[in-house]
Length: 65
Image (cartoon, rainbow, N blue to C red; front, side, top):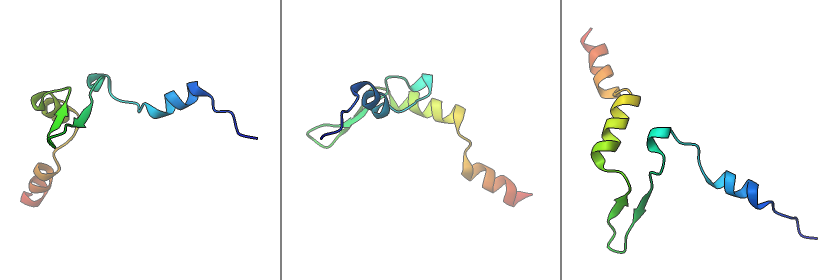
């Protein structure tokens, strides 16, 4: 007998948990091979600047000490 699949749990599993600032952010590739996203590059960069430390800058600071 085939196993019954609960549709509710499969829908919850396919959606990743994301930060509220990135809610609705999607990336796709169109027929010309161009990357298309729902957020602008500036918005993505601002989010990354706020939430991720820049490893290159911290390595240079440590080497200079």
